[in-house]
Image 1 (spheres, one colour):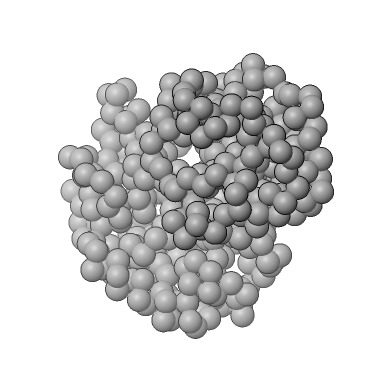
Image 2: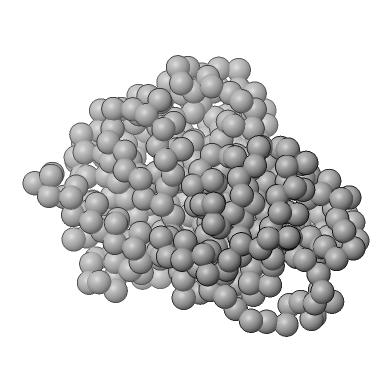
Length: 400
């Protein structure tokens, strides 16, 4: 079996790590595996194909920013990719995020329909069935169910000065319809439900949760508490790749005003500017790609708080569980699906009082680390990758 994955990134961020780790698993099991990607954040490998270059990305970004044409540029880069696909002749194509300023979705799907190669498409957000945005919970928009127009988030990623959401919606619907052998995968039941309400509802949808490397994320001893003078503190942890309003940074800033003397907030993933603006009882750490450092911080924390306002199936929840740390999360998207009543507390979205009460509850009646570790076993990436391989074989078998 020869598999080609197409992803905006690889090795970087949650989506890039999923694509790369799946590739590594396939290779280790004797399959032919390749990754085509649009952005470089590290050294390339012999099994990788770069789609376009930095200049084509910049041009795509410019057309997006000016005319809201995200996904409809990079024509030359996509035609070259198709030449590479023809050369490889994969048995199966596995798509990840197609947003990211790197590929032309119409050209790609015209080719997919022509060759009829089986396609697995993992949705990591909602961009594939909207006219512009990657998520819409934050603004409570439901136009995507019938027809996007007058997008309330045109200045949100992928930001644009103009609103072309109506035309984008129509072009996506046309491009993504009538693919003979397409299976959609979502990491959460929540996102699967949205897909079944969208113009993609006629395609089969499979749910395969995100997974993590339990050899890397595990209870890890460190000097983190001692080095930061936190040996007698109750640590409330937050982690994000980018902290913005949607990730709930404002709730940590408000929460800081309610902390007791023996409580402290630790936030990982802040920008330098954000770090400088923190109150004294919040310890800020800029973004790190060190899994070892993250595991040490997760393990040192008493509770992981995820006040996200829109999310699919956040891997930060899984990382916390794998390090034995219980979770408090807003009732948002698929964020609630990773925990049970032994490993965390789900609270009303945006309710600071409930958040404060939940923290006090866990502080006074700690949830067992053993239950968190047991729960994390459900999300072992080896199990999830085996589910993907089983899906590959099912799809290929049905195609034959």
